[in-house]
Length: 138
Length: 404
Image (cartoon, rainbow over all chains, first blue to last red; front, side, top):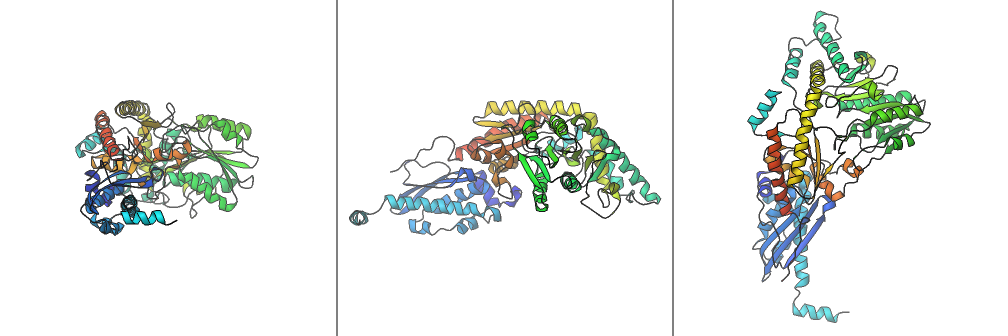
């Protein structure tokens, strides 16, 4: 394939990625993929009152991988955590006006990274009552 | 030469992916046209329309022979390098199978050879794949050690398609023949013939493959040299063309183009090699100066003049390739994401390049149509692209996670 097989949106998010970099004092980080496979993403989230107020990424990967992480971080800003938990890879793909078939896994990676980050946030921010319950149950 | 360089400057694009293919010379194209227009006859025809095509093909055969130091009569035209390699490997194996069914080759051959020997396994042939050192070079002793009493064929490339390393074919050939003169030695020259001097007697090989589009000839024409007395079972049956070795209407225009490209390559070889090597060396030095944590793959000395394969820490190859492409620079990459099969480079793996580093590999191949300005532009653009991608990468530089 040639780069012209990528949509204009994919190319835009690849050449001019949004929200690139680490978030200082992030509330959650999700990491998926492995460099040996050619795809790895770190997603950083800042959360206030169960709402994502900021998101950023660092990605080792191809054009599609970078574009998907950039688009996904744009989409989740302002979302409530439960909304973001329901974000699917095809939503990200649609926002990018589609991906070549052999690159769809890059959108899955971005969705997985987001969900990992949210999961890590939830684990670290269980409410007092839940924490007590956890402590009691053997 | 000047027409090519003017054109690429006009387009604002620079082409440094000569490993993939090369632009046919204007005179190659001019030589082909009559055989697409008025001289369209079949070389096999007895009537006068066959005359010009037949003569042109004979001339091309002599031009190709001259390039590799072989008589025209030992040249069989094919559709390209893949077919020449298939004919060499399968053709020689099938013809010699009564003597044995063992083949020796290397771990870094082009797929046309590797897949051919794998295919032969279905017919009871066995292949030993000899490894290479960290430069991609095969040790002749290791190859000789792999020979058995039932070995009938040794196939080794002259130069590697991915890192450009040149193999010690002459030594391998000599030592194999010392051990058993009946073993057929095939050299895949599809990445070397037309680019560096190749002579079938100096190398001592029985079979040699080559392809036109590697050295500014057209796509669709290649050749297999077969030393007199070496038997080949044809792959394509159906007629008397190519002395019965390869049936089918010969691609006269492309073959004529191949001949012209071969003649020019022979005349200009020394000059092209010197100029391309000088540009490549300057590019290599310059990139090493401007970028940290990169390594060059391939043999420092025995390497094709235009080849520069670099592994770049922290970034992925396809993204690098696309960014460069957006800026008008055409290169290649060995990363898995840059292949439609999503498979990483077997050659880099065989050399022992770290899996992750292999994902960040870029292959730049200069050719005679590149200029010093092209090198300047690469020295400017490449480090910028790499810096931008490294800033984005979670595995380059320090990772600092903060938690509230």
